Length: 165
Image (cartoon, rainbow, N blue to C red):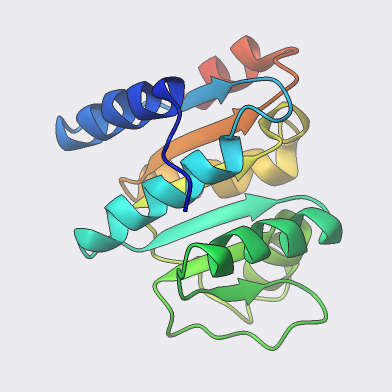
């Protein structure tokens, strides 16, 4: 495995420091394509797992669900996938979840309970500002989770993340 880049090390140190201090407002990390956001997410999930924290990483498209699942496998992080066309594995403390599937199964049909995550990561956070994603994120915040968004497109993030607190 390649070593982390300095900006990844700094981001991980600052974010884990916030989590250890009990900070609970949503935070969004921005960086251009290829800056290592997926690797940073994987390292944060590892950090959380070492503390026995459950984690969930939300995506909004099947392609991204498969991509981030592959990154987690590459980093030897055992996880389940909560998305259409996948057999759920609810016993795993780390989950990759599709926002549309989560909304359908948790809020519409009541078939699932919201994943009991202490660390919530939101990929493509710039596109997760609608009422569907917002409700899921609010549920996690109400349960005391640390919510962290990731995006290469920091458009309108200020109002989305400020509206959540």
